[in-house]
Length: 290
Image (cartoon, rainbow, N blue to C red; front, side):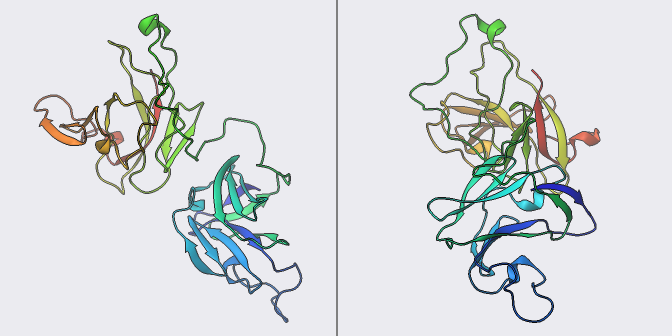
C-alpha cells in the first residue's frame, strides 16, 4: 500500500501483519473486529507496530527494520510471506528481512490505519517486493564490498574521481536517496555512520551540505577519513568507534583509532554551536555536494 494522508494531531502510525483469522470470523456480536490489529483474537496473528514485532499481541522482537512511525505520505509499505513461512516487510521496495517465522499456511494480510495514517491505497499485490518508479530511499543496509578487493584510486587523479556517493553498507538508522548522494538518519541518535564509496585522492576536498537538524538531541556531525576498506569489520554505532586506521574530527576533538588524541585550539568547531540557527541541534540529513 501507499500512504496517502496523515493527521499530525495523533501519534503512532500504520500497523501491518498477517493473521490466520479468516475475514468474517471474528467474535460474535458488534463490533466484528477489535479496535486495533494488536487486539485480534486467536488464531495466531503476527503484526509490526513501529519497530516492534508482536505475536498474538505480545512483543516478540524489538528494533526491527525501519520504524513504521517514520513513514510519511508517499512511502510504500508491503508485507510478504516467504516460502519458508516467514513474514517480511517491504518499505519502498526494500526488504527489511524476516520479522517472524512459523507463519500459518493460510494467512491473511491485516492492516491497521492507526494514529497519524488516515488513508492508504493498494499499489501492488504481486509475489515480490512492491514495484514502482522514482528514486526511492534505501533503508536496508547492504553488505559492504569484500575487503580483499577494495576500490583503487582513479588513474587520472582528482579529475577522474567522479561524483562521490555513499556506500550501501551504512548504519541501520540511515536512509539513502537521491542516487545515494543524500543520507538521512531516521531513528534514534546514533547508528548513522555512512562511508563514501570512492577513495579520497590527495588534495581533493570532500564536502557535504547539512539539510536537516533535530534539536531534540545534542552534539552534531562528525567527519573524517579511514584507511580500512569497507567490509573488514562491522560498522560501529558512531564514527568515533572506527578502528585503525581512522582519523575523526568532531567539534574541537580529534579521534585516532577510536581514541581522543588532541584538541584543536583555533578555528571553527566541526559540529559545534554557532550563531547560525542551521547549526543548532543534531544532524539528521546531509547531501554530498562535491
